[in-house]
Length: 424
Image (cartoon, rainbow, N blue to C red; front, side, top):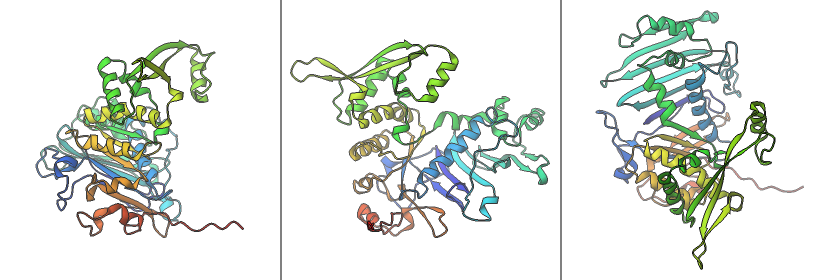
């Protein structure tokens, strides 16, 4: 469960910007559906979803990208980054001071009934700070803090009294390269205490870009069982797609006879491996209204919206069924607004502790009594061209205010400034 995420000096973000999923105590609408109790004394209810609006190039995708970067560093910096490799980090470049400062990220989340506060700061060359605070009994315990010494002379570590590992901690320190995270390395060397933190990123946090970039592979894997396929079909029919069944035909193709529409980089990798590739030929089965016969439709004959929804189906059901956190960029791409409404309502009414954060340009969700006022966020750029993230709750908004109309009229900001184009 995610409580809060902050990003500083990354791409279009200059100053610290924070997204919180803690429910406001001042709003009561949809309290039982859109919120849930995290089960830890002293913590507020958490929101099941949040929507982010803003004009093109305002920073919405950069927010998703910042979290993707954090996840990559946690899961892969110990294995995939070599000594001397530059980190894929871009600070805010439109300010002389910011471009020479570190980028910083911090998350507050729950895993296994414990609250964690984890973050790090870095630049292209190295990790400069890293910290982890745990609250196993509601009280803060600093497990570790890492700070780089001046002139690139290594790191100083401070371990808390509750941080386990004994002499092994010295081995974890020695194995941590300047451009890798201590968390990532320590878990690779079997730190049992840190595994829940690592597992939160690995098993509970899912991030996907626009639907056009979402591969259907996971949904296909769900369909390998009869129960899984039924759940996918039911999910699709909830959107009124009239699909009676799914046909899956597995076959092997050689590296010399790859499909023409396969991405070139994938083709090249398969040819290097010199092996056969198992592919699944997916058919959408529609029923003939006169004869009752099932008629298979090739994927290419289905709309892009149907293909996108199928690709979404597996991850969406996985998130709801396993209490995961899903970040989606441009959820409305190639999907009808009413389908987006249905997806959000499905999550709200699931009774799970799953969470969804998504960006969109579809304002109709504001007018359908789906979101609470503290679930709506905006991103816009200020005079210095830096992205600012702020909630609707910063404004004095009445409970039954026409949010969509107010947003489109510019009351809350974060709308494009459209100028008349004159063809000279």
